[in-house]
Image (cartoon, rainbow, N blue to C red; front, side, top):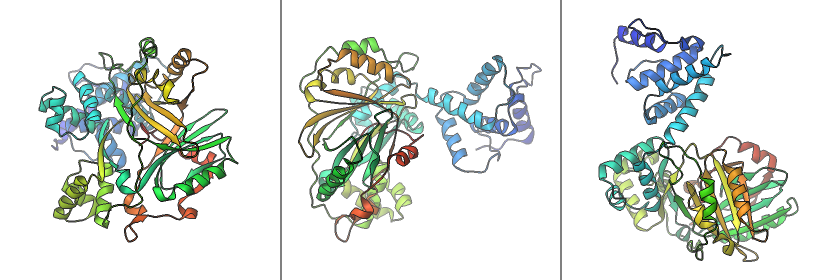
Length: 473
């Protein structure tokens, strides 16, 4: 970073406050900013111009601001200034605080990074469909140049839109993924093996919980589900098959705005697909491969970042670089962990979940795949062996009601399906280094400590304001 002279910085500050040094004057937008808000605006300008001035103490907030400025297309300072002037023109504004300005920053940034070029849309789709491919092969599969692909991925990752994570191979880790469905519950399951929780609010609330359970303890989870039937209208437990995550940029228009064409989408509901094929059921084995403490720490690092280099693993785990390189290679060769790309587009804040029979799913799936981010999987009831299909989607904010209305109007009353608008949710990663007992070569288990029930209201309150998952794996 370049440290400018005091005079240069002073001139820069005067320009920020709405004064043009040529003698022309803009609307005095800076006068409504509180001192802290004005300092925040100056910091944004400094970050954009690479001026090193200590206005804030280093911390998460300034790091977040740096990430926002770096990933924002164009000048964030100019966009903020324009927006403030627009608001002032409406009248009635006496002061804009730092907190107000942060809200505006987040809103502008979310809209900005949710707009994609045709190349970025292609790269998002290709990354999801081919997570194992290296950059060169990925570019070739999408008919793009290496440079185009590299630049697009860098921008998308910097904005947090695209991340390449690791998914444990359940078959080799002695785990079984299950879905717990609770209707009108007073209690919900609590366990470090619960990785995702979704809430449907309303007069008849629903809770969907995903658990990566040790296969040998499935009976214990079934028993607690049976016990919850006394405090819920309905409670059930389902095996989850290997699902499919998809991205589709069809409803991103030429301006980069996300707008569902519900007329087009509804027409797609009239076209039936062939029988649904999603993959095999994830059935883990009771015996797991030998894992050292170093392996477990590396696994946790790769779950967060599948492409983590040996140097990044060293920084996260404290092991030597040669050990990190060797053990990482062995873990990947044994297919203990698999790559998956995760997409988080800020404007796609609504979540919709549909559970239906396999036959009925055939008339929904083609239309479902047109939505921006979708996840599809099969379910099998652990007790009755009844089979269902689960469809999950991330769609533009405020479009859920219209989409559900279009879906309901196209389905028959006798169709076996249920659609839900997800109100809140949370997700956590399963920490292998903490939950796996390497001496006994099995997952830790103590029903009293690792499997319990908590009050619905408390868990629901804790999920308020959190980011809702985009898939159920």
